[in-house]
Length: 251
Image (cartoon, rainbow, N blue to C red; front, side, top):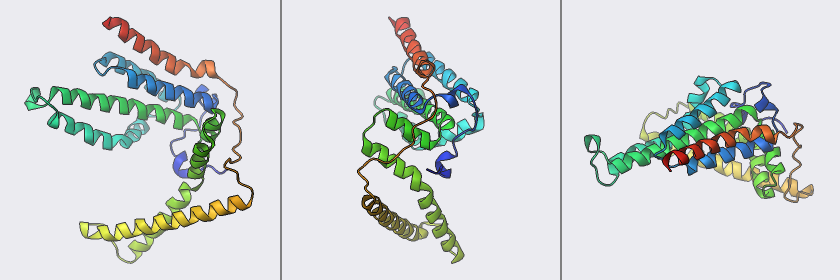
């Protein structure tokens, strides 16, 4: 399986302990960490600060610089836009400048948990190749259709991306510029054509696989890394200790 360039942009080539851990253990570790973060009450601000310190320290240890961390947080812009509206539309506007206290707490809850989740996913992407993530999902015994969907995605996302690039170049060669809402119908038509082409390509690929004996499972290579569950458990264990510490402090 070739490594797809679009998804591999987040990978940082290195030899840290995080890079050497088995993909399955890293996936389980990051998922457990995010689950613990979500369980944390929004009022426990010191706990969230401690979570951030832990995950940022691991990112730096894995070779991820501050600039890349900030770029990764761009993914949560839709959540940020939604969260910023909550203090304006929340109940009982009695806070600063007439903002809703409940709305501000809700906005904080969304922003901090989404940010920590994105940083944790960045840690996984920085230390694990897409093909190894597929192997890890298979090792964790996830349902075969889910593994197959993700495998097809990392195989063909570059194909669709290249096709979109060619369409955009062809539009620009004909003088098209998306500078006003009047260009939206052209953009919608182009995206529709891209969807139809991608769908037809998917049908052809599926028929070709079925003709070769495809039974719903793809041959995904097993990761050649040693199992390192005792090391991978450090991240969720640290988060769990922070959560327990916050619980004891409020007890």
